[in-house]
Amino acid sequence: MGREIKEPWVSEVKSEDKPWGLETTWNTTSTISQCKIINIKAGHRTSLKKYNIKNESFYLASGKLEVTYGDELTLDPAKMTIVVLTPGQVLSVPSRCPYRLKALDDCVIIESSDRREKAYHIIEDDYKRKSSK
Image 1 (cartoon, rainbow, N blue to C red):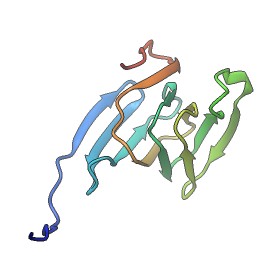
Image 2 (cartoon, one colour):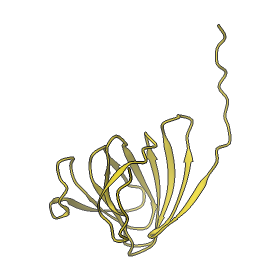
Image 3 (tube, one colour):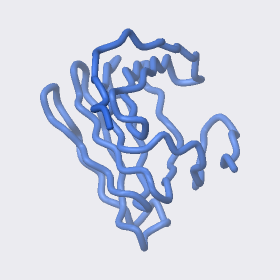
Image 4 (cartoon, one colour):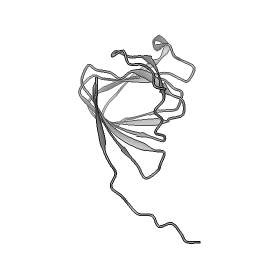
């Protein structure tokens, strides 16, 4: 039986306008991981949400970012932790843990995740978006 030969490839990049900014996505060498560049405009924020199986890490490349997060048992935003990230810091969010990103300045964030899970549960959203299925 022959050995599979691995080789690099060029990946498709997709950009999607969001109410809070722009999201650019590409897949990595793994069939289950993905990377994104997230641009959030100052004063805007993402939905407060959580994923069931997806783990994410966010590297703040530029700007100032307020992060609201809780453990997997906390869904009440009033009981969540709020921290401010500065460039060079990383936030890691395990599955089932809620979080929200708010740009205090225009922000560029690089996201790495271990799954391309599309289903998420929205707890709050400024733009009236609903949870995915």
